[in-house]
Length: 263
Image (cartoon, rainbow, N blue to C red; front, top):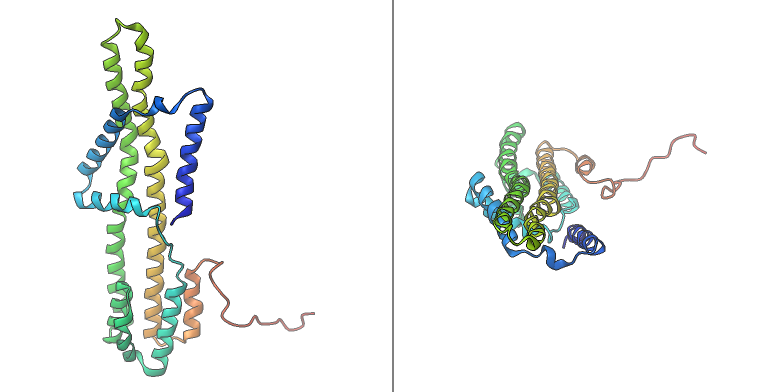
């Protein structure tokens, strides 16, 4: 469970609703199903027009995972690579063929398989970087869907408000209802602007941050496999790959040297 996402959304909604109540309003004033239908339907339709249907479906499924996500730290991946380096140093790179069946990460599995097959480090890097680039390009479409939706929804909300005003203007003979009708008409604008700034655009930003972190860990994996193939010392590999971890996660691998002459 992503506590930050849940608390952030709850805090944003609570602030808006409490502000409404403090100003003398009530929740019923902004509960307009027709306004929600206009904004939701119009925004979804515009996004489906811009992106392939499969991409839109994947994006909306990913929206539910926005609140339930376990961020990878990289520590497990680092220790796994160091263990592979130790085994390759003792028994040779070919000995890692026995470990392929236990590797669950498809990216690491393919990189190790190429290494075991005797692929040159430069060629292995080219192949896996191309795979990483293509995967990143496909994954980038998911936050782009929410960014586009965040751009469309305020405009769709304005369309809903104008439609509501058209209906109000047709009943000017009941002047006492004009004010209430105008207030109801602007609810669609609230839905459009609120959805964009409280949910859609923040979701796009968080998904993009997660994507960058996941791609960085794949880069760490690639560097680890290439270092193993080049015969680098496992201790040096651990230090090298530790730079991909955050400062709070990186752990010193050995004793700190004492400066000579220190008091």
